[in-house]
Every structure is written in C-alpha cells, then in structure tokens.
Image (cartoon, rainbow, N blue to C red):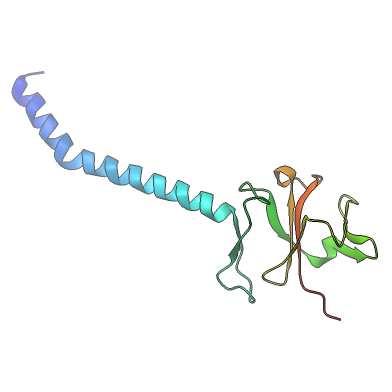
Length: 126
C-alpha cells in the first residue's frame, strides 16, 4: 500500500472508527454493568415502585426471585418451600423481612429444586 494511501486510511480510522469503537466499548461495558446491578435487584412492586436490592449474602446475581404466595406455606414449624418440602424455621437466620410485602426465594444457583439461601416473607397480618 502506498504511503499516501496508508496515511489517508490511518486518518480516516482515527477520525471516524476510533470514536465509534470507543463508544461501542463504553456502551457494552455500561450494559454489562447494568446487567450486573439489576441481577441483585427485586422487581418493582406497588409497595416498592423502584424495587429493592437483595443482600449480597443472599444473591450472587441469579439466586433470588419473587415467588407467588402459593409457593410458600406457613406452618407451625416454619415456612415450607412447596416445591422442595424444605422447612425454614421461624427463627432461622435465612428468614428475612420482605421490604415489598411479597415472597422472595433465594436458592442455590436459582434452581427450583435448590437449597434455600434466604427467604423473604411479608409481615404477618394478625
């Protein structure tokens, strides 16, 4: 390639492609960062319209999710995860208050048959 062509090509790359590549890299890193932050967040509800963050001790980015109240049964011995039969006792350290009044279950690897890491329960209404 002649020197003038190489110089012209380098000028074009520096003036147009470099910012495009930089913008693209910035956009990708922003999306990746947002994905990581959102993974620890509960979805918004009427009680918490902006959502809330699961504690890192409960969630590694994919372990927690909101579950319907029919997925959890309250019994004298504690809360029963209906899908696994696991019991989380009323005094178990894995039991947490739900900030949005919904049930949220954090299980190992987010598996439906996984062991409970944390269980967020709404306040009781006596």
